[in-house]
Image (cartoon, rainbow, N blue to C red):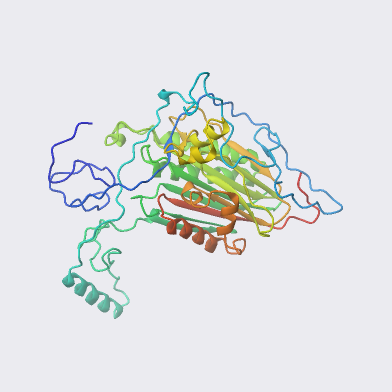
Length: 465
């Protein structure tokens, strides 16, 4: 794109890319100080990439496996966590560390070429984001005024305390959510979210580099028709190169959890319920692209709203997972001498390269295209192919459902088990906070979302398949 003549303020905010007017000192959308434009950090948000040769989404659902009687089942082997995939086929005893099966590259393609055609529309555009927001020095007069107001408020219970800026700790916050002293935008509701629902807990945080939180989650618990408890969690990661990714992730998570609760209460098999919930989430995201053109006037050339999804259900001794994209589910047993496991396989460029034998794992995940995804929810997805799998662990544990904002800092199952607190099965909210803190301490380059579902002790004699 041709470079515009230098103006008093850039044509677009260097933080959130919102249009600006001449003379603006701060962005009206995010409050960014336009007097200084730091260099963009080396961030790698989730990107979309079209996949060729996507198969049918028809599913032959296996029934819940019956509980055995007599002697207790033998413990798992170090690499054994049995389960079945969407078609009823037994899962491999030790899935690859990365990736899901992918079609081989076209005949004659170079060793490091992507098997996807150039027309697939990969987006690698990343709007620059500052490492930090520079702040003006606080005005002593404003600080003194705020202190006086706070003191007077303490003496009158009916007086509402004024909001003080979280950045400069001195200025008042106006009705639009900006500091009157330094102009800093105040945290929004989605910048940090926490929720508990029965035994399930989830935490989501904006991270340290993004200007907004494009992740979303939904958790819930209910009872099956026979009174058996069921717990569930849905985590969605908005695709950063798409339009309104935050709306896409929120719409998908809400639609999925509503569908899951309704289906489980009617007695639908958890694996079928999860497949149908992913379809419902996809339809909710597709509907966002059907809004009038005026809703997209500021971003006419971007992709349709899109996000990834991953979810898990714990019910009747079953652990069921489902996903589209590169968010993950990990199994961490309470007994840490037993092996942990990753239960999902990424729909990503790196995973395809490794599965096709075109690159080593280290080479693929070091490439800048590693996090380009080959499966997502959105109107521009080539074909929806939900992945589901069911497991029957023989011991108690914790199910970790998370976006890449967390697993980037604990990629293998062993690394994830090391950072999950030992009491996560009885204090899931505390453990979720610890995991988010681990990602922030590691750099917080992306939004971070994690949900934890405790898996209870299986009934005596209920062995695995």
